[in-house]
Image (tube, rainbow, N blue to C red; front, side):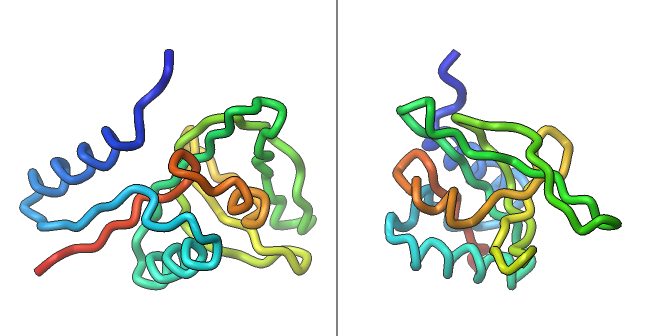
Length: 134
């Protein structure tokens, strides 16, 4: 009923990579500073690494809108309002002079406004920062 705690996701990721014989450093919520979090996301995406992330708010009226993007019409449409959810950030894109995160969720592609997500940054709404160790 409560979902998967973030610390279990971090430990699960570590053991998954260990099973693949990869040494990894993984840290949930590497920063609560908005600019640092943006830089870490950008750095991971630049290195072709997907970014596991979550959105969670205690006050349920503060949902986060997921959008769909129509490539032909170049138009965003509201698709789903989430209150607590894990997703994977695959890209950072600019649409209509606004930065969006292109995410994977429920086997579909959605977009979220970077600033809408980042303003709720907390120990629960954050990213799983990871890097391979040699």
